[in-house]
Length: 173
Image (cartoon, rainbow, N blue to C red; front, side, top):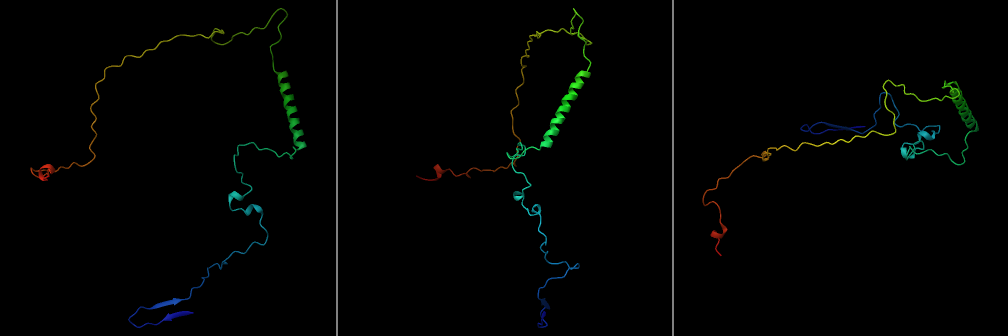
């Protein structure tokens, strides 16, 4: 219930009530109900370190098959058939390709250079000696003396005669 305090006329009016939960417009429940059906194991992991689907370590390493894992015989047969077909295609391509006919009796085939510009073919690589020398350094004027720019504010103090204290003169032995 509401508690109202009545005070003398010279004080201010105060009102206090007991705390209570407020009702929202949609009348939403305060807590979620626990799920009736068991969740699948993929949705149980909130931390990635405990999720079995996350692969840790070097992902560039080769994936090795366990010793007990046997390759699928149908897959092996399919791969072998694909290899056989590729070899057959390669052989057929080689047979279809036009080749230079064999030379007639008492003749031989010789490689001929048919390029636009002729160049000498030899096993010896051409070499040439080249000498390079730089000019002597020219006399350079001396660099000006570096004086750094002042970064502070200059101040001065004026000292009159007799302002300084000379310890040897002023203090007796």
